[in-house]
Image (cartoon, rainbow, N blue to C red):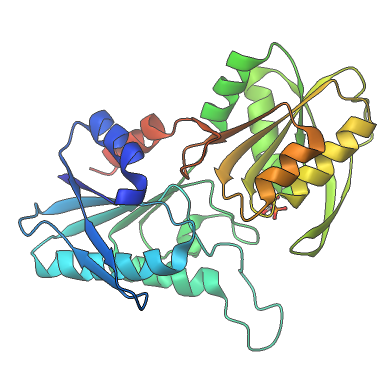
Length: 291
Ligand code: R5P
C-alpha cells in the first residue's frame, strides 16, 4: 500500500503514513495560467493506494481527484481509498428551489464511481443518517472527532459548560459531554442568509462559568460570533470554540476573535493556525479496519 499525498496537505499526510507505517509519495500538481490542472502520479504504483486530501475549497480539488483516480486505474491500481477528513458538498441534500442541483447526491455518486472506499470525519449529514446514503459504497466510513475533541478539552479545562449553537450540533456536544463529564446546553439557530444568523441561548445559567462552543464547522464564522456575543452578555467568564472543520472563510476568524474568544481549538482536518487537535490516529485506525 502507498499513501499518495498532495502539497497542500503534506504534514498531515506524513503523520498518517507514520501511523500506518506505509510509504508516502507526492502527487505532482501544476496549475496552468488558465486554471486547468496538470496532475502527475508516480508511474509505478502498488495495487492499493490511499489518496489523502481534505476537500475544503473543493472545486479544483475534485477535478484533480478525478484525474488522479482515472490515471491510477490506468497505471494498474486495483483499489483506491480516499481519505478526506473534510468532505465537501454534503450540506445541499435537497433542492430548495426548482431546478437546484442536489450536490450531496451528485458529488457522492462521483466519489463512489472513482473510489473503492471513502473515509471522512463528521460529514455534515442533515436529513440522512448514514454516509452510504450520500456515497453509495460499502466502505463509506464516517468517523467522529468527538473522542479527540473531548480528550483535548479535558487536557485544557477542569470544568466548563459545553454549548452547541444549533440542534444539529447536539449529536457531537452530547457525546463529548457524557464522555468527559461536563454539562451541556443547546442553543437555537435561525439562518436568514449566509452571513446572518439569529441565535437564542438555552435557558440556563452561564454566569461565572467557562463555556466551550462546539460545532462541526466554522464557515462564515457568524454562528460562533453571534453565540460568543450572547455568552458575554450572559456573564460567561471565559469562552472557547472547539471546531471539527476550520473552514474560516474570508473574515470569519477576525469576526470570531473580535467577538472576544479566549481560544479557538480545531482539528487538523483542514490546515489552519488553530488546528491543534490531531486526527491521524483516528484515521489510521479506520484505514486499518478496511484492510
Ligand atoms: C450548520 O448547521 C453547521 O453545523 C455550522 O453551525 C455552520 O455551518 C456554521 O456556519 P457559519 O460559520 O457560516 O455560521
